[in-house]
Amino acid sequence: MSSERYHDHFIVSWDQLHRDVRALCHTLIGRDFKGIIAITRGGLIPAGLIARELGIRHIDTVCIKSYHDHMEQGGLEVVKGVDHDGDGWLLVDDLVDTGNTARAVRDMLPKAHFVTVYAKPEGRPLVDGFITEVPQSCWIQFPWDMGIAYVEPISEQLKKQESDS
Ligand SMILES: O=P(O)(O)OC[C@H]1O[C@H](OP(=O)(O)OP(=O)(O)O)[C@H](O)[C@@H]1O
Ligand code: HPA
Ligand SMILES: [Mg+2]
Image 1 (cartoon, rainbow, N blue to C red):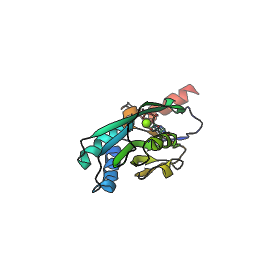
Image 2 (cartoon, helix red, strand yellow):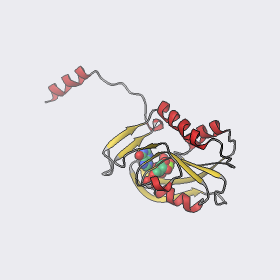
Image 3 (cartoon, rainbow, N blue to C red):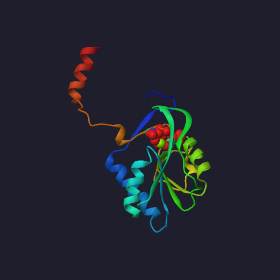
Image 4 (tube, protein in one colour):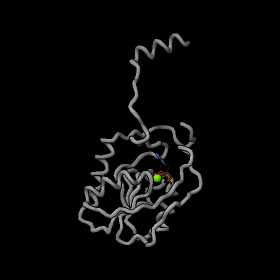
């Protein structure tokens, strides 16, 4: 892990993500949203799944970039905004961590209902809803950033360790 802030990984599989998004949708059902605004890029995946569950066809984006080098956050760069205050809209991101992204987007869309799938303690007060809280010291590893890889049997790993020492 490259950043000092993160000491552990919180691994999220596609199945787990799908279950968590569906659980989030249960908290949103019955509300009448004009549409969804996904915060790119991480918000696009939950936004698509939420749109399917809630029967929403209108999806817009706020395009923003903050983590320039994997776990290192740089200055926020808004690539595309929207021309309203978010009233009646559902704003979606994959997670809130330090809350820097959420603060910037909340300033742009103060009236939107803002949800994330995962929330860390520092960012949690900035969202109206989320499903799973993750410790601040954990880096959430999303399925789109991972691949399936071969893992050697433990006995073989031990043999290699013994021959190296
Ligand atoms: O609460 P914060 O500390 O601001 O971090 C949360 C934001 O960081 C990630 O986005 P990132 O800027 O890495 O871009 P991406 O969505 O394109 O991966 C994540 O998708 C959130 O939008
Ligand atoms: O824990 C995280 N995982 C993935 N992307 C992120 N962007 C900010 N924090 C995280
Ligand atoms: Mg993002």
